[in-house]
Length: 145
Figure 1 (cartoon, rainbow, N blue to C red):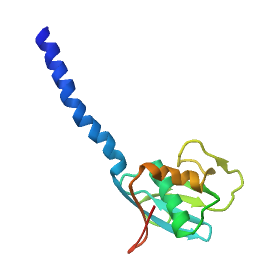
Figure 2 (cartoon, one colour):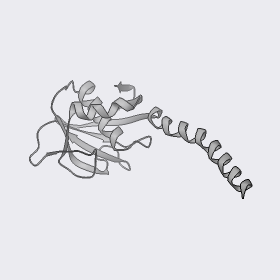
Figure 3 (spheres, one colour):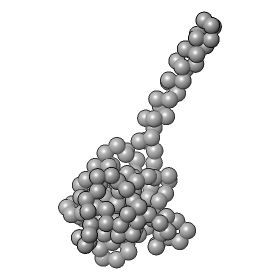
Figure 4 (cartoon, helix red, strand yellow):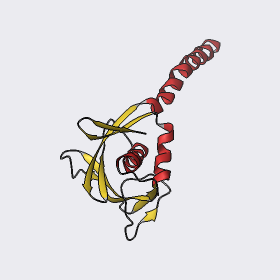
């Protein structure tokens, strides 16, 4: 019985150092998300590099700030996550920078319902934990936070 407890304790001690780096690397991953302008007031963020909801909202805010020069206002989902309009075969989310009827502030960074809205500054706050995120707007154009 004592041998089994000792073996379990050793296994647990050996597992702890390997688990901690795996969690901390989550925020150090590289994300480069393509963004395509749809019209004067909307653009599409394309899923890439395994990015999730927070990374996509962050990319939308980077594009709004650095690509469109907007510091204030809202980003609202007009077309939820689904087949991309600008890149066939990919998934994307279309955001608008103008007010949309029925839009509602979101408390969770979801991507599956149209009308969800965040202030640009709030969406940009998702970038604070992401050190390596970039937005690709063309073959040789990268925007970083």
